[in-house]
Length: 452
Image 1 (tube, helix red, strand yellow):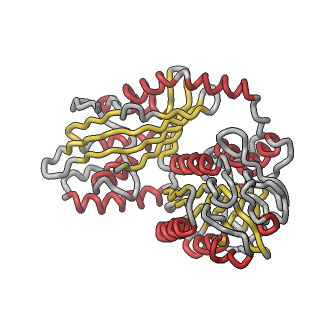
Image 2 (cartoon, one colour; image 1 turned 60 degrees about the vertical axis):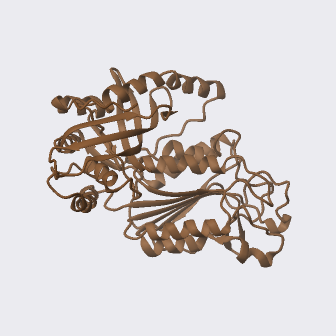
Image 3 (cartoon, rainbow, N blue to C red; image 1 turned 120 degrees about the vertical axis):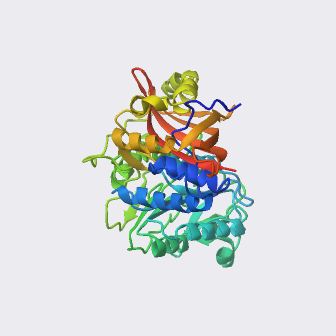
């Protein structure tokens, strides 16, 4: 049950997202993350409008992230005519969560037929208006015919070449939508390199690349795009034996490293995949970006990529997962006693204890002074507040012995000092990147999204 005591209870990341549990959810998140001045005297409708304005001001103040970033993430694995792929849906779910944790708005869909896929692309197109960067991630079956690349929906029946235009979706059309509306267009394709017309996509095909044929073709694009392929032309893209494909697993490891350019990230990804597959798979990319792009801006650009170590043996991986997994109780204690109940009478000490010297909030990096101002301004508006961790919602993803991602749901209730202002109540999903310090956990990254 959520804590209902009105003293010193609060949350350092309130809900976000376009979809609202009413305007309250949007206001709660945007003001909390932007450090807005007290606005409790304004009517709720005006407050909601100003909240969106504050988000714009926040983003403009961050040099490396001046505008919104929107992603479309698709995982197709259960095919009517081509068997079942084990990992595309897992890959898409995990990539979507990771992108949200670093500030992307994410539109996602899994095991989509052609009409459903087209609707998601239309939703993506609408969301891209006004965005600074767009990203398309696809895991599943893909093919190229006559130099043009296609995404294969799960209901496709590709027994005859003439059906291609009716059954598949050209990837270049998605890229064209992105290039027309954003300055930066990013595409990640973890798709098979088979030409199904040579094999008629037999029902026995259960991997992304049962036979390596012509592979995906290069794209004819020169307008601020970066396109990454999970393997080289004509080579095999593996589905993987664990939860994720080798390519998706490497992306998940490296995409959130602060200060790393996308080019350096792909070097690290390529090294990991080559090592894990024993050189059987080698990712490649083509690009025409006009400026440096970082998924998570850092205080200083990385001059050279980190050398990717060979994937740990299974027993070592299991030991690392146990090391953090066994510490789930301490993470839950940290959330309940510190993160969800900060001592607002000693805000400077609270912020230093929770965030250390700096942290990434909704994809932008802030030092401790900026975070302190955000949080102090936010809590100054409320006479009382209460919130609680939803039972059973905490999910821990370990990243070695001293790092983990914590995703969980909370319920919140803020009572304004101004009795004429609206009360803010609702539910949100929060994702924190955590690192273990000598005296407990610290927050490295923080984001949240409203839940209905």
